[in-house]
Image 1 (cartoon, one colour):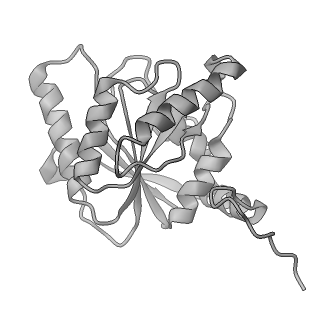
Image 2 (cartoon, rainbow, N blue to C red):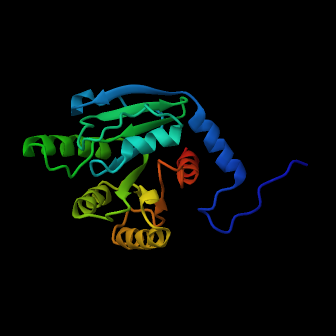
Image 3 (cartoon, rainbow, N blue to C red):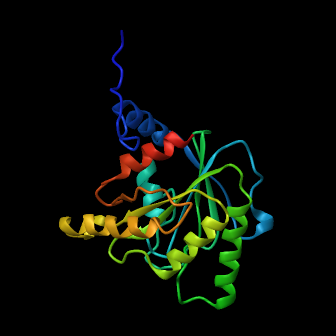
Length: 220
């Protein structure tokens, strides 16, 4: 009889088989599908489930997408905040669509442009029945900001499930990682649609990437 994974008391604790299945999924082909800069250019809804990545400008969204897929240039990385100005869609092995949303909270753009980006993101979030979850990225060095809470309120209102993902934890002292997690979990408890568990990650070292990858794979 083949070996089976042991029962898991913690539903968030992944088995070796689940971790390996997720690794294989994210190691598969991942192709850019389209970029939408307006409501009219959003791609048609298909049967493919979607997982979106949102967060403040320069929080590390593109770096995280690249780390999850084991690629360096799948999602464009820039040192200049606010570079991503459209919603980018990526087809992962014909199984899942990864969606990179424009960053918010960047001051050096016009108010009209900010409103356009926010409106586009809202249109997407409220109109995608195939959207399984939003990964809301939080810079672990700075914690949950007012603009993050505003986004969380919008996600609550749209009844979209989301999980807070801490980024850049490699830049924290080890003792401060637990504090950052506890603070973010306290913020998540204030919002009805937020997943209770906060996941720390680092795109530089790979810390937490396998756990996030597996959690996403289990959604589909």
